[in-house]
Image (cartoon, rainbow, N blue to C red; front, side, top):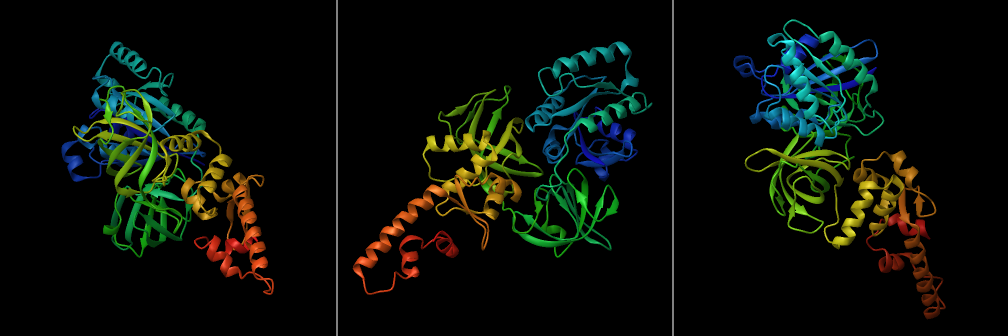
Length: 480
């Protein structure tokens, strides 16, 4: 079974919720105010199966400009986007903003859906179709299917389902072999069950086990799981998942937190990134405040330009450092969106390169290491991080810094460049550094024997205090 997340995008009142309801039979507007006002305010969720081998989870997002932050909370885990354009109104402001957000988040697949076909004649449908094709030209949606539908009459829905199935079979799936990460988008209490959280499982898998919430490190136990409303023993990446938790109150969990394996990852407040500024944005100054969105998290941040200059020009990409006002759990490769502080509009986005950058390092060295983190393979990244650490790095720290699996880190530890000590924990050390250290030890021990010819040898504790007083206790014995 391929588990694919489908997200809607588009202007308010262009029929996103009605489309999802017509496809799945599920009403995604759950709030009383949404039903009273007839608009989506928060995220809505639905699901459907297309055959025995494809299951789609739908994330229906609000289209109103005031609720774009809620849209961003659901867009991060999307595999396929439905860019919804009302055939009676064509392309509108939030059509453009939502489309830019999808592009900045690195979504690779999608379908242009022209809704409300029953309200206009065929000539107008074709005109809007041409406008949509021109609008997405040069983007990931260029050449994508364009389907005209009516949620009211059902016209075009079967064709849309066929196109959705084809896209789902061709889309890349999230890795169930990766580390468990579940961005929380809802937290509530259910009578008879207790605390429940929901989210799109973006990596790994989860079963009845201990988990941890970041930021904060609160640990709790999964008592039960549901996927699309059905009980299950195990949820895997790409599924909309609900977890029943013990040992925590609903008030202790909120949208923006991330559930992970205990002790695996920690939230950060400083990240180095590639930032793309939209051509429609104003120049972004060094030190400018922005709103930062990643997965379901939102916080304020300050932009620091690392490549020199005082501004980032519209339509350009630069490496920047973002100082987050609140900690967020991020890993290298995660995508994010930045919005102007005031007025609050989307101005850019990018990719996280480093989640624990050195604080004091020359600018030229910073740019070189970020080039490695952006473009190099696993081996070069692992070697660089190990060389930077004064006494090497353990497997657990390398995993937490890179987001790689243990197997990927071990495969990247080539014996010609790094020394691997398997006990008492897997530890990687730069071979050149170790050889230089052993040369110094040889000289120290030789000098000690010349000065103390009657003593049996130099005490190891004395050597440790001189050479490796701040290193892990096992490291000196391993090198000797």
